Length: 227
Image: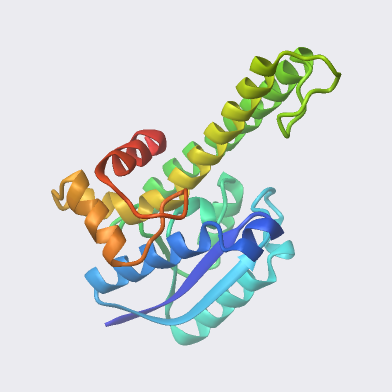
């Protein structure tokens, strides 16, 4: 049984306090470890941004996890590659440290070339998310709506506020889907139906975005959003 150190990360202190994303990552790692006969010898949780190719200096928990893995001759395991970083240069720097790392979403067979490809895709995704967010906020401001969905000026139509609120809900749903899909996708790859996946999530105590139980349509929505 190979040994690995689990590394979990969220980008904001609000997420860290609330556990948003952490439980989904932990569940994905536990499932992956069980299927692949991996012993999780330690779990490291960090609340810090992954931006910048010098991010390791600002992420002492990750630095400690890498050092600990090197001493043990173990590897580092994350739920998704972007929990390490969405920066290609940063991922390349981690490879140069000679500490193996794996992402549940990519499996144990992902070679350095594939890791570079997925890191490049994640970096592009981050840039696109940033562009979409800025464009949406600019458009909302023109309509007189704040980020919280409240009017900048009095007398704005109620429909404008509803539109901004719906957009904010959509962004939250997309983020939740990205966090939870590492747990769902392996079950889907095993040929399980959406209903069966919903039952499995409920049996493991995994909560939906609304904090309630799962049903088939919710599972399908997460897969569509993550895609």
